[in-house]
Amino acid sequence: MEISKCKSYRDLSNLVADVIEYILALPESKLVLPTGSTPTGLYKELVNRELDWSNVTTYNLDEYVDNTIQNQSYRYFMMENLFKHTNIDDDNIYFPGDTAVWPDMNYGVGVDLCLLGIGGNGHIAFNEPGSSFESETRMVDLTEETIKDNSRFFPTIDDVPTQAITMGLKPIMSSKRIIIMANGKHKKDILEQAMYGDITEDIPASILQTHTNMEAFYCD
Ligand code: GLP
Image (cartoon, rainbow, N blue to C red; front, side):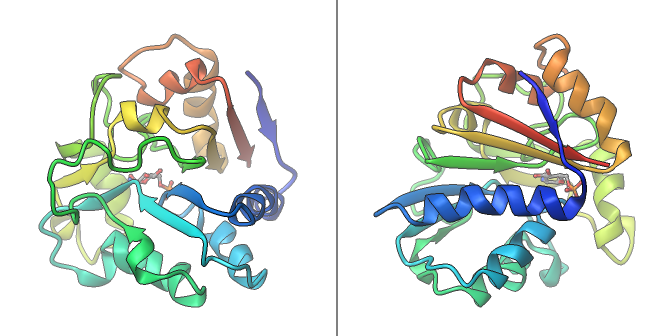
């Protein structure tokens, strides 16, 4: 397992956009997508490429629970940064928690590509440290560190929801291919620990080492 170091954030975004372009060209495809600051350059690049999104179904990794700041919901983020600029069918856009059957153990299972960012404490989606490697899609409490990290997107820290619904580590690992992206020096150590260190539930992203088709992209 090697971390691919990209020359710039732009390069990282372009490289991952190339992979998504390939996936979108398949007759039918399924993608798991992240939010956060890391994928915004990628989403911008994808919009610029004016690709055909008519054959894809997307599953977002997570969504806040009881969020009162509507323009900070992950659905809003995805609509603004990506979906509303593409021809994706609204019926093919899924967020955890909005399925009729809940909890939905099939949510986002076995997709063609799962894209991930990494939290400062090694979380992926909202699987915080201590999450079981066998965890399913479920409701979780966010750690203080994550609430603090994500407060930059909210008017005050008190507005940050304390709970979320997240895809579990088990369905994430069922993806045919996984790409994890990290942007910035502050992510270097945790990405290296996750990719090269012990495989431990204390660093949820470390489970990715056991996936047979996984790539990590980093830029500082
Ligand atoms: C949130 C999301 C994660 C994301 C992480 C990192 O906690 N739930 O999916 O990977 O933030 O965000 P950023 O890319 O802004 O560093």
